Image (tube, rainbow, N blue to C red; front, side, top):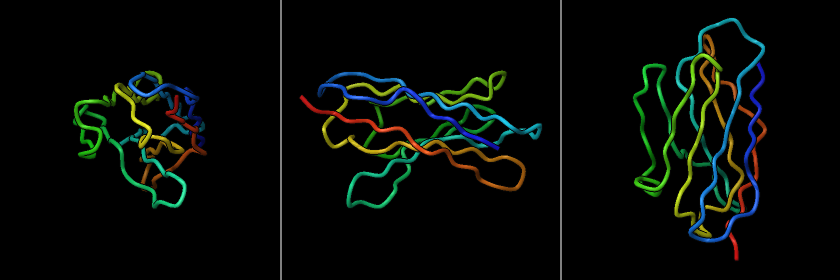
Length: 114
């Protein structure tokens, strides 16, 4: 199973960015999908998750700013990030429940800076 995240980069404070993550290499159904992040010197933290049925959950620090969604026909999960803050700077990792395991991608860097 491979997870390929894309869409990171440099954005100014207050800006927006959309991350995508495609799951490939499996014929099994995909359960929960989501995003975590890790900033330098910090532990990895959950950002948002979404079930196969579309039920979402968010970390308090992104509620109202980030939106997670998925396209089950494309095995893809998205993270729409608005009103970005310098504190959102981190490597963002996607994950997916495939079979009885959780698979994770390599991450994409998001830098919020003027």
